[in-house]
Image: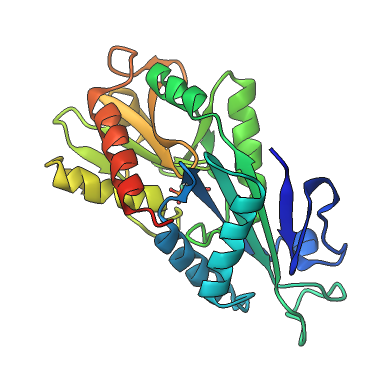
Length: 287
Ligand code: PMP
């Protein structure tokens, strides 16, 4: 696959794609991003991702780099130039390039970078069918996790700790012992009564697009959803556990730390919801 990135108005070979050293994204993590899945050459859940990008930009008072129709053209052009069938589109907007000073610059055009990456869907499906291990980690992030900011250092450290402990994802735990979310996923359990449980939206978690779409799918399938925090102990004793994100869709968690979830195999609710989510988002996807 050719690798072409979009950087501030130009399509450039990925290896040469770079931003200025005084880009505020680089110096202050003063920027936001989105990750969208591409399946069969179609962008999944594009509208909700662009809505969330707009919200993140508004919350941080960063100017949109271009109007939405133009951005949709750029995203498609990056997909086209990369011959992307199945993969991920990453797009990032920062407050732009300016002399380093914490306060907002008076005149800086926001920066836009778009990259594409293929994903092996067969491998991802195999991972889902196998189930993954989550490793708990203290949630030391800031108080605006609802903004999809590029400042991900606590997430990076948690994910690395999980990896070093043999896990696939870190489950972040707040000071009261409740799971907030994963390092790059939302966290769910199926409780002993068969209800789907996930934390309600607030500033402690990112409003996942997959979370939102999955709720619709689950409701239509007659699965009862309860939005409330759950503890690590409750999760370890749950019937099922899983994670959601644009990258992982719905992926069962079969172990949390050293506790085996259910019978140690991916749960039937999670696997059914994974199938339903993929079908629904593909059906909604626009070319
Ligand atoms: N929480 C965090 C912290 C994330 O980084 C992500 C992935 N962007 C998610 C949840 C899942 O969000 P989405 O379903 O929109 O990918």
